[in-house]
Image 1 (cartoon, rainbow, N blue to C red):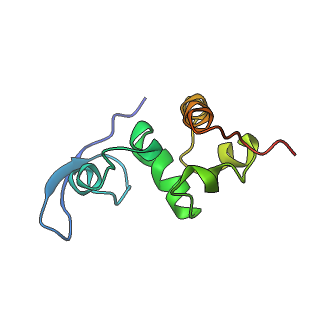
Image 2 (cartoon, one colour; image 1 turned 90 degrees about the vertical axis):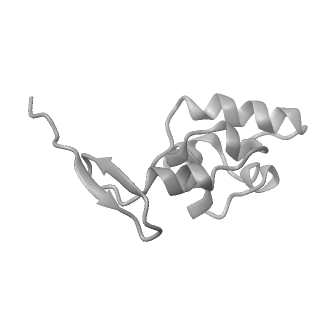
Length: 98
């Protein structure tokens, strides 16, 4: 198994960080933009970005989708679905059933 070499990078805002992947996301910038409350604050950054790319920023928008559709999004993992389901239930909502 080959070990990935971490490379030093600097983002457009000047943050210095190390990454072994080709992912262009600066971890410092990403932590700065993480919501402090609401359902998006409960999930991982890749899952949050997946929902944001789809235009889902509030629970009412999320309720328009089936669980299977959300799981198909790049960055969404199966451990995120129970968190999303709980957030929906707390507002009296559910994923779409059909």
